[in-house]
Length: 457
Image 1 (tube, rainbow, N blue to C red):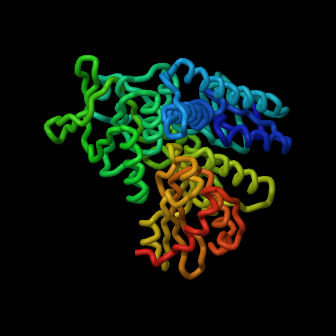
Image 2 (cartoon, helix red, strand yellow):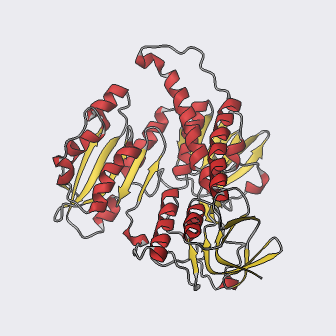
Image 3 (cartoon, helix red, strand yellow):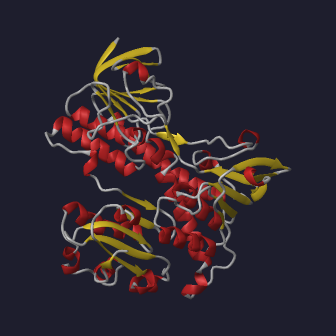
């Protein structure tokens, strides 16, 4: 039995930062990682996908040269070079992370699969480690659904897509939510024919109807085919092609293509940790149950990041680290329930979201004010030739506090923070209206948006 002050399982977004803080506090720490440093974000998520999105955007803009007064004849896509660029960016991030971890004097990086053998005791590579504090940052993986015929056809996930160095002739994407949409647009711009198949009646089922409808229109203008309402999919091989049919309608074909990408969600990496042995409770889907400070049901064990089911984003994982560190070492009580939901969809134009949506507003019991402004009204968007989308906002009529916002348009993933910060400060929306904003920007139209507030129905 080897004794440590702390054990951190998983080197995703929260793990290394937590190790750095434990190291600073003088605690001997074991950091256990069975696969890649940086987890999903650095290796198969944020970093590589946004690098690919940037390449796809550059290709798209070159093709649009005529709109801006120039011609880029014969734009060709070299996917080997696109992938090589992505790999370089990922390597830079992962190498930097490895260097950071190596600089921590009291942290030992252990490569291997950790499994609980008793409360706060784990086995890894023939070693048995024990600590008074254990932190789980094990992340998630692509969910592979039980679709009839899936085992008989080749398929890709967001992870295996990172190895693709060619342009699929026809990419069929099962899943019309955040991951699927980002891949759909980038591969359409790389030159693939793309079809999205979604089981629900609309893309992005959790978003407001007007947001989902506008994104669908943007995609269809890009030449992406969309099939919604596919509730009972089945797959089969047909020669060299893969056919997606509707089993409940005599196998009516929905789409057929050369490659299939599964983008139907994520599953937590908790299935092989031995949680029961450690007295750690999880829900039926495998997400570890935590309180408002990331503590699990087991004494001395915390869960951070995707696996605790309290946020599926890199920024929520980082915030989990901040919450744990503040409560343990700073006598600063921070809680998960303090954060305002926020995220972005990194399509072109991007969607930035903060706070509640329209359904939540209707069910809140509050008097609500709402406003909406098309991006075509924004001078900076017209100047850039990027007028697709709109911005909208929800406000409490009595307190004048901002409750929710969606910016679908040029720089929407950045502009949303001007609203989010005011929401955190619990200041009235009039604070934004009274500020002087720089012209010409997208953000300067937020006061104009707020000037159009009317009772929400």
